[in-house]
Image 1 (cartoon, rainbow, N blue to C red):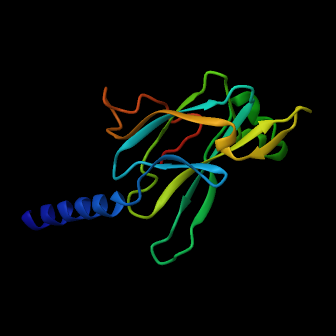
Image 2 (spheres, helix red, strand yellow; image 1 turned 135 degrees about the vertical axis):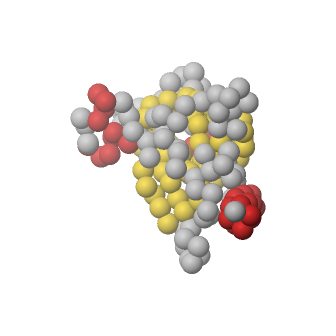
Image 3 (cartoon, rainbow, N blue to C red; image 1 turned 135 degrees about the horizontal axis):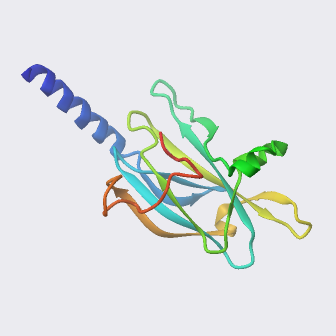
Length: 168
């Protein structure tokens, strides 16, 4: 009994310590926003379009296998509403429009046992009404960040996983 309890404590402690360096408060990187909570915690963030921009976002999961130095992934997590799922044109059902008031989203640790994180990519509608990829920092603001919070209760991130589904 004591031996199995000790092993269990060691597993949770080591995974929490390992995950400690993997957490990433939501921040702009290259052309996307990167985020992941640490250990078994969660986070919430409001993504708000800058004035004058019509924006949509897509979330993806990225990870680095323990036996490799190469980051893998690109697994799409986001899903638009049911009415949008009928349109498979250019993966449109993976993009979610962000209203003028912004979108509150929730994220977790993205897997506490290996280096991993979520990325949110952005598109904006141009003058002709077509969507095009753009650096998120040029069209979105990151607001009201609640990072590394308990996943439930009043101290939580006060956000929903849907529609970006950043939950592993």
